Image 1 (cartoon, rainbow, N blue to C red):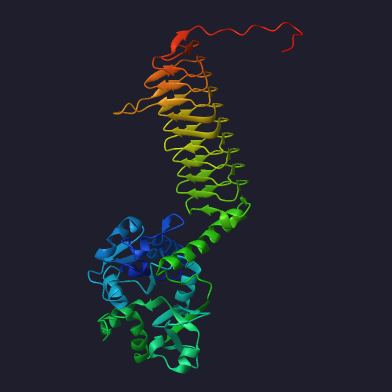
Image 2: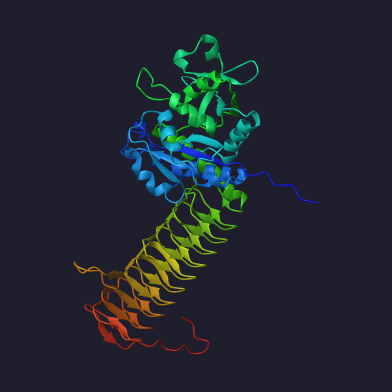
Length: 474
């Protein structure tokens, strides 16, 4: 018996409109490049299409066509590897943008989905629902609509008695009855690709500004006797476009809630999620605890059982398991398992804190590597230094690494002991097990096991502590 032939997958492609500068943002940065939770809003739209493509099983949808203009050419870095760029040399409206994109689409595409690059909260399942509705109805167009709590000046979706879309009318042109409806156009469309290619050239410029509007295709479809469908969604903010910085802030809040909830469901404790800011790129293991006022940014990861905060900012850093980082700033650094940092510590770029190390009050580290179990408890600065395991850094210790021309390194061996207010004038080395006296200014290397005292420091043999007699008390 011959097995039945599998139905071939439909070819689907997306067009993302990203040619507008977004003047209401009042920014030199194109609107779709403004960040949300550490990432340009356009990237979230591309994510939504990736999710939709996976659900649809349409391989051609994996890399959408993104329409840009000379004003938004900076989006290349976001789109790189994720889609194809199509230039709209002079922005002349959404209809003209789609026309520019069609030239970059394969000829065998059957469905074209059009959405804007400024709807970062949109979800893949919503895009799939619109595409599947178009296929079900064999419609020329299926659009997404929202039942808005406050439709205001938004364009109304006018349906026939059978539920299909008759037209989209702007609020200023709507009748009183049409204004009574709260169903508004969300600006996302699924098209019959062959019909779109044939009819997009029939769009006529607007009398007011000369632009070509994609919404005018609804009328052309009705003239052709084709169905125009609509999928209505609740007004939950996921289909809202971003036009100004107030809306940007609202979208970031919603996205932050989404990110935090995902982490909590995966085993992260947040004492007060409303005060925790976690970028999309942050990786958190199970049993991480985030106290109030925590900000985790960029390529940051936190290991199992670690507590962060309160009032701590970590950016582009790796924090191991079983650590505690409190009221501190960590930038571009690594903290190994079991270490503690803070309160009021600052780890600057290039710092590496070894396992079980203790970094305390008002300690600053820059471009330095501290071995396991190092203690740097308070009021000290280590810059361009290598610190061996088990070394104690006395309060007020400073590595004078900058000579006015170049940065010089300080090397301190394992199990050394630096007295209070030690100044190490780099380049200098302190050997394993060596010590410095309080207030020493070390300008020359200190051999292993020796003692450096004075200003400038001189090398001495360390004084041995007398052994206590049995039963003696202090």
